[in-house]
Length: 307
Image (cartoon, rainbow, N blue to C red; front, side, top):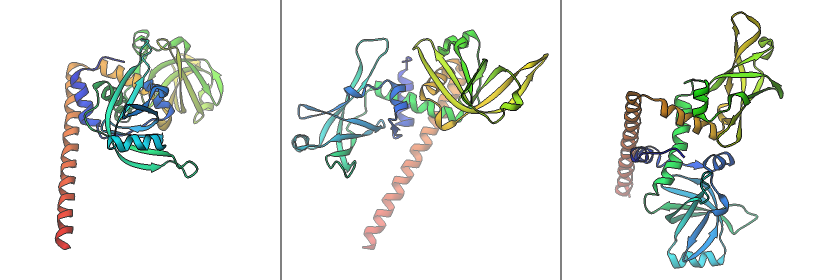
């Protein structure tokens, strides 16, 4: 995990505290959550659970609510602690947090199993900085994948090293057929590659780019389609093709890597401007929430006066 300053932690919390992250398989893999080490703690006992979603203010978990848990909840007045646990690839011990919470609601998970329930938890205090960093980094990457999707990263040996990418291992598959390629640039929205062959025949074809990352040994696959091609001067046998990624299927791991790289490459002036813009967005969001609360309060007063 990249080093995050206290200022960035504060910005993450101010900007994203109310936004939920659904814990899909892709998200769980990207943030290195260890599901086997996640549990609820109540009245001195532990119950395994599954985190369905989480924000920085609360979480929704799936848990088997049996009689012993019901008894513990009555004893604790519905106060519990939720344990988050994350694998640290470079360390033997996990990164874990116990977050104090209060149960706000139960919802049956399915008719077939009456004990299995969604449990809505409200955190009773601000969560640890480590959890804010993990969720904030993910939400920041998602936001920038939309706001900066056309910002291209030209791939040289140096930039590839900063991304952890092994350029010589990049593979391209067009409708399942492997093609030799050279990756020239990449962005949240797509990539440009040089290939051998007749590019006209490849327009609008489905394509998958396989990106090997040497620091973790994983291969990230990104799906998209070929939207245009450009000739290479002096060469009739090769061309540069542009691939637009499928926005809804971009792996979270890739978003996180590109976002960290772009943050590192910003000049001090750009960083200041970005921080100012994001702080302004947070202020505007707070103003809107305050205005909404005032409108709701006026509406309640009007209802009482009408009765």
